[in-house]
Length: 364
Image 1: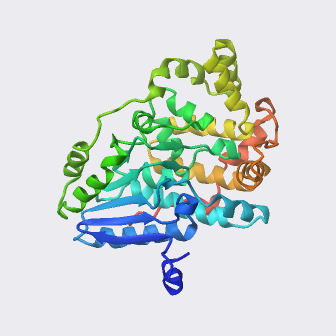
Image 2: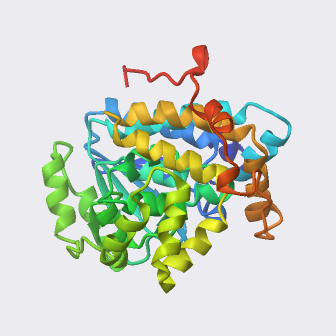
């Protein structure tokens, strides 16, 4: 619901934008949907950034989510599913605008603070993890579970994951496992862990900053509330994860897990066997290409190419059906195994889109 439509009905809009002191507040406001983001919301966030960037009275941005469950569960996957079934163009439009917004956030000239409390997934990661001051809590559950939907970690996820220590990013990208707050800091998705009980006090302190507050000053303020944690449970598994996932072919990753044979290796193998074979192969290639990329934008261009191919695929519709629509958790992937994913199947995911290529507005 747009802000104007909400106002006419007397309802709250899906996005609340206002200034509190020198803070330009952007609140995702769909708590019943864990603040899943619609195309209109992405557009309204972009408009809000236009206003806040130009306003000298605004010194920093704060992105937060309404309700108790989380910042954002991702994009409006149900709308994308319905549009994909009728071969519509929502994916082409939404992902273009979303990815351009992701790149804008990464380069935003004012401090961009995010409260990544509770659930943060998919599109929520795109709005949060490219910010300059990313705060997680003891309640944070961050994940990029897209491979389980026949998709891949997008919204610049391949850039972020490729910069995680060792093969930690490959592990999280392929398994879709959840990071807690310290895991997110270790993996490079967040900067500081702040107890959820202190968020309100931190928020109040941020609103008392002057419009001229520097990024260093904002960091110092946040650090005063932070626990100092920089590594979660996954960091302790670094050595094993590096052994298992340091391969550029899914077959070799599966073989490494089989060879290890430990309980954890076999549990990881079981998790991978539930994912889309095509999604895993595409993800792994995107992650390896991202390691050689020089910018987030370069990765987003590549992700956009792959996303449009995914949108047209049966795997995407089947993954969403099994996880979100019917919730039977029994997707029938095509092809059914990683050994069945051929170079010919992969090629369209990485082909140039010509006049439809993703292009960034350099004025923002």
